[in-house]
Length: 350
Image 1: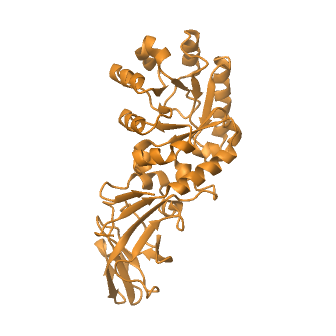
Image 2: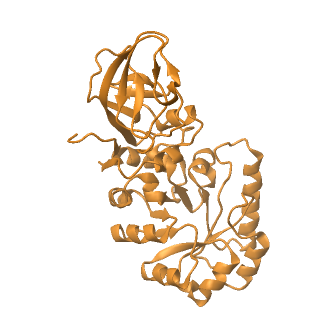
């Protein structure tokens, strides 16, 4: 490193390995959409798309700005997953060959006669109660002839990460009813990452996976954390028994200790609420966070690691220390950790 900074290294070979594993779970005829919303989960959208386009069938984003950026990087299909809201967005979608999700009646009214020029994905509310048409609205739209064989009927699973939750069966049944309403003339997509892993038989025509491709789906141990988030040690000090560390003096030394100060904090993306004892890696050995995370610094206990010195790199998550260990130990989800990485962190895609 030429200057002190936290850095994020995204390993595309691990993403490719994860995608290959996920594809092995689903039907051979199912197509794989790689979800790269929120700047590819905080990981350099344009570079990720360029490196991964030959391994997936399409890309999914949420905002039009990202859809346009992805279009500049690939000719693969792109889906704008939360729809269009203005005439100008319709024009942009047509000009850039961007498919769109329709989740409410007013969007059908907006596209009007333009529907034949747009690739339409029709989102159904099967019980999650966020976005999506009701069964009655779907029936009305279908009777108007707007939904065709090239359209994709889709929904989103609320509890796909818990295969025993009864809501899964309810949503699956409601989705089947919706498919019957359109006389089984559309394509289908129900699986997000969790659903893909726990209900691969529902892969149908399309699966939509983002977090699992990055190794953030913790219930599948064959997936690898595809990024390393790390920062250098900029100071090491000895403290005596009874001395306190950091803001609020939250942690008190129960014995004479050796602590290292790491050059990263909540301004880089490490949650300020991170608990004491959260594991990190330094020189392939485990250490623990000791004291409150501040804006720019984290202190760790290296009492039992005498070989550690300044400028050594400390990893908060990596393939060897999966991101889910950090998130689970702190009552968070891996999605949040990935997307909170700040712009001042140096990102390298390999």
